[in-house]
Amino acid sequence: MMIDYAIYLILAVFVILFLSSAIRILREYQRGVVFTLGRFTGVKGPGLIILIPYVQQMVRVDLRVVVQAIPPQDVISRDNVSVKVNAVLYFRIVDAERAIIRVEDFMAATSQLAQTTLRSVLGKHELDEMLAERDRLNSDIQEILDQQTDAWGIKVTNVEIKDIDLNENMVRAIAKQAEAERLRRAKVINAEGEQQAAEKLVEAGRMLSAEPQAMQLRYFAALHDIAGERTSTVVFPLPVDLLAHLQGQPGADK
Image (cartoon, rainbow, N blue to C red; front, top):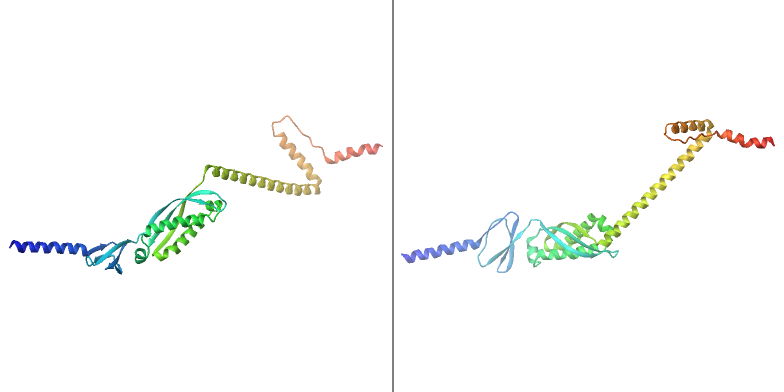
């Protein structure tokens, strides 16, 4: 009797071990790459998966978007400026079979490829382009990575350059350049203002010369403005006709 109980117990333990080895449950975002005697036999999931113990093995694959930080890279720009650049990489697996079979470690492979691509792409641009055209550089890096990782069943969804670190000497040089640019713009604006003022003065002079009475009215307006100010200096403008008459008087006596 005891022997029968022992046999039943052994069978129960065997069944439990068999079921625990055969049954797998995959979540909605997971897939299982199944190998039968070492050969690929399919991708299964999500849900309940039943395997043949010791004959079939399964590798779990996560299909969610992976966020991976690209460590700072030493980049020399096209205008020979040394900078440190880091970025963030977003990618996901779209083909679980290729991600497991065609590359040993898709995480490490994608990380190394992203680092080399970041240095290669940024090295073809000048520093001003790195600082002002990040969106275009992000798109270029993402496109190159996506083309190269397609064979691994990986889709690179986005690349974002985070920081571009410059040494102190370069920061001071950029500050001087920005200051010189602001001074140049100020001088150009001042020159344009002088040009416009000169054009308006020439136009006003032509209008006043056409009507001599208008000049007298301008004299009276100037006197009114001076009288309204608290100043000890008073200027009395003389009519131009009177000055011309005085200048011609000595000639008349002779």
